[in-house]
Image (tube, one colour):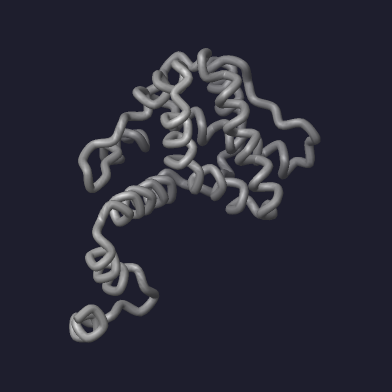
Length: 178
């Protein structure tokens, strides 16, 4: 079975290809604040969704979100495979969510990738997010990024047709857009 990262397209925007996760991690290690912001923006919805889907409150989910990125910041230089940062982030969010659901005061994350893999093997597979859902969330994120790059008129047309609960007809779009 293919991994999530094998199923996903390369990150892109209307301008073309964006930096890969590995490139962002390398830039972050070098102190590039813009790269850090891009990494946070790239994964913020996904990370926030994991605790919310597990039934945690918005406040608890925000705490977990902050803890995930604080842990990433602290361990950035220890990540051996920066191209797999997505898996690291998701796994860390799941651990922190799992700890919160169990009512633990402290969020625990293994120190090494080997410890993380060993712990993951022992966890029951009751994760609220399946691979397909993660892929769907990433695709939604990529669509949002691409839409941001479009001119207002084009963005409005596509939003009317594809993003509304009840899609507008082409005639309605023509009337509204002109």
